[in-house]
Amino acid sequence: MELFVLGPAGSGKSTFVKAFSEYLEGCNVKCINLDPATPPIYKADIDIRRYIKTEEVMDRYKLGINSALIKSIELSIPFIKNFKIMGDYILYDTPGQMELFLSSRYGRETVDLLKTDTTAGVFLIDTTTIQDAESFLSTIMENVIVTLRLHIPSLTVFTKSDLASIDIEKLKHEIMEKPGVLPELLEKTIEFIEYTNIPQRPIMISNISKKGFDEVLSAINELFCSCGDIS
Image 1: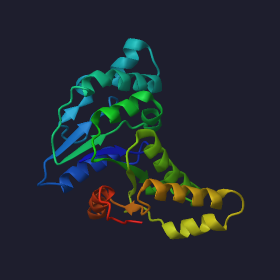
Image 2: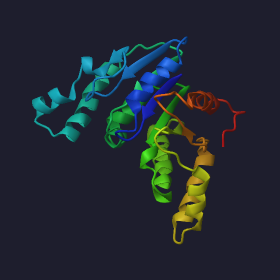
Image 3: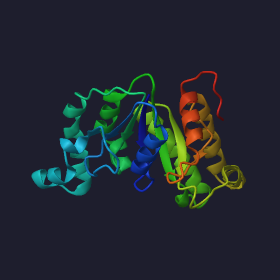
Image 4: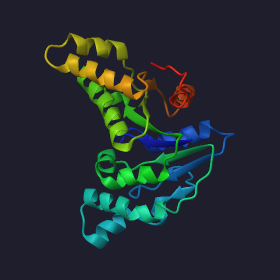
């Protein structure tokens, strides 16, 4: 099973890869760093920085950081084509700037090269950034974008639950009570989620204590089980 760990900068992607690989001890787990801009904090079975480093691309092509990251992802493609990875669980740590990875065609090409019939996205959101109903809705819509852009099923995982907590049902209720287009937007988003079989149940985890990891693993398995219902 291949898991692309995605999320905004600061959401805890690398920390999740490290902690979840430890949680899966006893399985054949491979950790792959696809971020050419950042050294991994875990023991990477494959590190794209062995081949491409964003800081060197910046210097060579005289680019700013964002353009250099996109160029780095592009230059990574020939190496990724030669990856031979076998394991029970393969964890792909994606670049920190998620929007650049998703918006460039090279991010999509990276996923296309590596995905199989058992590939999913784990979309991480920092719980401390959810301050109101609108920010909650925007995170759910970001997950929809991941599925549309990368053509893989995904689930939403809220990290740092040991630092903050959110009441999902309360936030949904707040949205439905608001005037304007927000209630309809939430309703249509949920309809799309149901149509594409993206799990609706957000999962709260802590990368430190590994709380919620059982639920993450269960949700991942249910993504590929037609009998599963995690709404």
